[in-house]
Length: 214
Image (cartoon, rainbow, N blue to C red):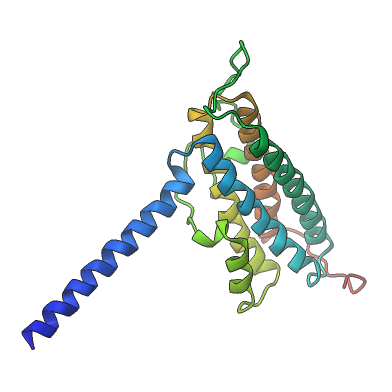
């Protein structure tokens, strides 16, 4: 009996070690050091997840404001996906800029977006869901969930916040001019969308459902 208990305890310890390793690895992706290539490899599928779930909701929501937000998210994120795919093809091996003039990497300008929850100045503790970086698994997971405006917003806010945090970390490490531009662009675009999504949850806003939307 003692032998069985000992074996079970060993398996439990091994499971916990593996679980903590996977958890920490995912957390590092969201708020740890990434090379330029690693950032692109994770941000492309991260954007694709947002596009996929937004297209799904487009077919269901009857809220005109939500439809407008979805169109913006789909267009912006698809555009940035293409930018990143093009950059992957031409990113210098040593991740160094060939420009003689260094771009400003300091993220210092505070805007409304920096204070729109869960965002804040600095990094947040937004949940780093591994499926944020796995479009196929994310879509499989969505099949078992009821997608509506409320569920979409609660899911998309931490999703966007992770992209903001990743980009803030990249700004401190990258030496590539384009990556500096890209990180700033993603921070701004994601923060703008966070403001829109948060506004949709306000108790004091006007809400309208249209039967003309399918």
